[in-house]
Image 1 (cartoon, rainbow, N blue to C red):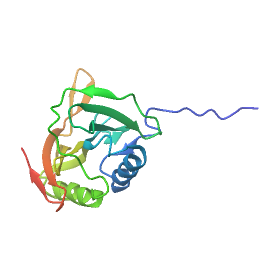
Image 2 (image 1 turned 30 degrees about the horizontal axis):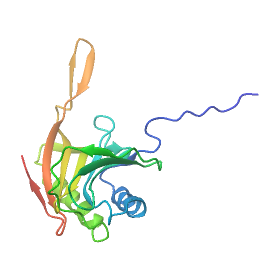
Image 3 (image 1 turned 45 degrees about the vertical axis):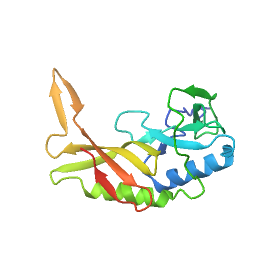
Image 4 (image 1 turned 180 degrees about the vertical axis):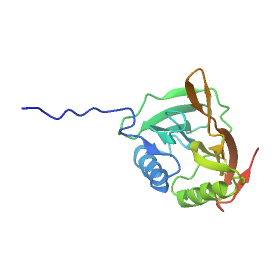
Length: 179
């Protein structure tokens, strides 16, 4: 009798960066795990685990100590694991994020606004990274030029893409092209 074998991959717990469910899951995870009175959060980052995948395995969170003299970084993985707290070299003059008031739906709206600004002749591929800080969300979107999606040399084919950077106003969901 044969038994079905299952393999896990690095993507098993990965989440789509631009998905509003992912953004809301991150918010809920941080609200449940972070004591923002003792360690206010000032930045939240999601970064691709593999080129053009648009998937992240964890949220990288930057925090301040309560007296705002030191910054720290910690990874909150989507499988529930939390990394050790690492000191950060950021200057401690950061503005904390009010996690309860942070409207992830507005950020998702901003992602859609950014996608709508991709010029004709280019195609949206994915959001490669996202950083929430100082009342804005900075995103990098991968786009391909229509008809020039790949290049081949010596029998090897590679995808060709370009990065487009946008800044989203977290209060309005308006995206501004930063290229």
